[in-house]
Image (cartoon, rainbow, N blue to C red; front, side, top):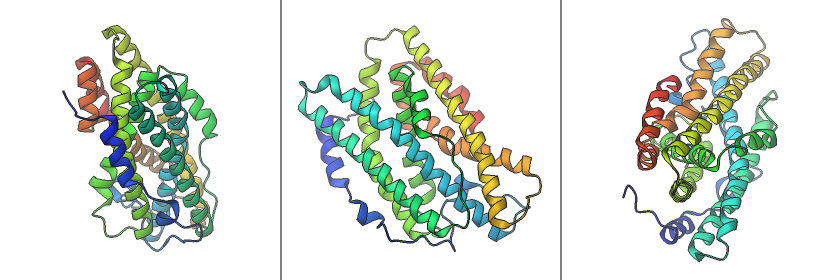
Amino acid sequence: MYHNFNYEATLASSLRAQWQLDDVLREDQELDFTRNFMPESLARTSAIKTLNPLEQRVLNHISAHQYLSIFGVVEEFILPFVVDHARPHLLGDDWRVRAILNFAGEEAKHIQLFKRFHQAFVRGFPVECQMIGPSEAIGAEVLRHDPLAVGLVILMIEWMSQQHYLGSIRDDGDLDPLFKSLLKNHWMEEAQHAKLDTLIVDALAVGRTEEQIQKAMDEFFEIGAFLDAGLKQQASFNLDALEKAIGRKVEDREAIEAQQHQAARWTYIGSGMVHERFQDTLNAISRRAAERMAEAAPLFA
């Protein structure tokens, strides 16, 4: 057995970790735009030498807006996926139903939290930051795929948020404390969601042949390619916002877009693909699935 997760214990952990919106970000709270929001390992803005330190910070803020906006988009397709998975079990295991419905309720709360962040960001940032979307269209494209492929994408993202907080955010003293607290509280609940989604993925893989699993992996990579194309477009939108905010055209824009696209590829895809717990799930399902993930991961580093 590669994990000891179960619905009853995970629900208990989730209830202990729960928080209320106003405890994390009140509607009237303001972000500190004199400090970075995102760690350098994710934003990769200080490496852009054609920008001065102030301009690098502006791009860091835009990267943070991208971060929570994209997580908001992701939460919007996680929510119907989780609810759909709960529906067939409504007359079965009570712990499973309660845990999954709690999972869905927390994802809905995260969507509200990210909307509050967006409102605070808009109040403090000088220009509009365009985002890919609409979220409904992105969600529909993801959810049309095999549920096992979708479940694996969601599991990867949930373990990824743990890696971001523990590996890059928790010990970074240069970040705005309010934004850092927001990411901490998001991670606290996502850590429980990763356990539940592991159980969901396990259930979706039961009884599948190796051929069926590899077909689901094909669709996993299709979803990844779709999301990566969105990240490339987002890098262009981010540079548009940067130029508006600093009042000039940036030098080597094409090179900066490529660098920021690669940073986003690592942040939203690569860092999840290489997560040890995600790899454990893949190995439990199919050794070939894990091998394919390891082969693809360097493209997103």
